[in-house]
Length: 299
Ligand SMILES: Nc1ncnc2c1ncn2[C@@H]1O[C@H](COP(=O)(O)OP(=O)(O)OP(=O)(O)O)[C@@H](O)[C@H]1O
Ligand SMILES: [Mg+2]
Figure 1 (tube, rainbow, N blue to C red):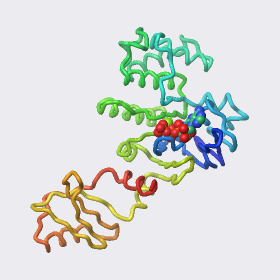
Figure 2: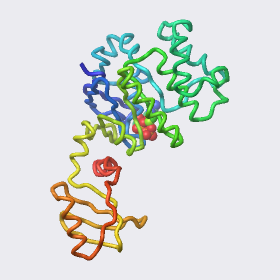
Figure 3: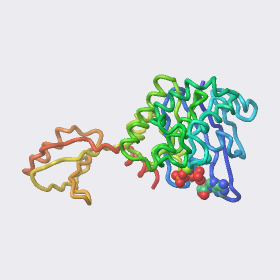
Figure 4: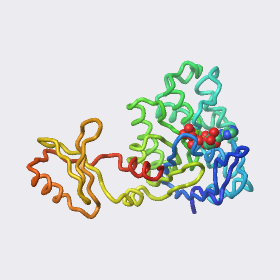
């Protein structure tokens, strides 16, 4: 059974088609990344699944439960961290989280342990009695994560969880997401503009453009689609070669890179450089392979 499935889902805002006949499947206990540029339809898709917007067409199932026919059962399995802050800044941190539990029929006593666990995990314990307006932007985002998790959902939606979050906190957030996957067997559906993070963290990736899914596959098979790999290299002098299988060039930042076709052995790169009397001191894969694929698809 899939954690989430969308079948021919469409959503229009007047004459604009925000979601165009979307088919998508998310396997349980995976981190699924939905990538796409501003206005591609990511938030609209999450809104249609989680019920803040109504789709115009199609079928959505959460762990086999149809969101139109088994609304309550499907909703109880979902946690949502929206892109925009949507809590009252005048309420206390812990109250914002406890009230959410109330929507799922749980009393504050029942969720006491879970509340404390989340406050500690998300570094909000010291702020628990303060009004949310006293929190920094990163803390507010963590508050929304805690709120979304209070009822132990099986499927968590994170709409740009690391937008505007500093490097340290981004790393912490990812660590926490991995922990949820591992220890709570959660399925995580997220959107992000940080392709390097998506490449590192996501098991499955879908790319959306103008409301259409361009690709949806495991990260591994997506990256395998690239016909070449790019490496950054350090050499004793500048090198520029353009052959079919191997291309040496300098980036605008003055960094030397070499693009090598998949069928070419790395030893051929060294041989070619050697022939041109250039020595290679260091060579390593350029990390953001996904960005290359993304840019190719989004052309
Ligand atoms: N309530 C609305 N009324 C009218 N148009 C809307 C509404 N919400 C979204 N749209 C439009 O639908 C399209 C998709 O928007 P959406 O918010 O889903 O994009 P997104 O992929 O989440 O972008 P971002 O990366 O900027 O968050 C955009 O053209 C947007 O202007
Ligand atoms: Mg959005």
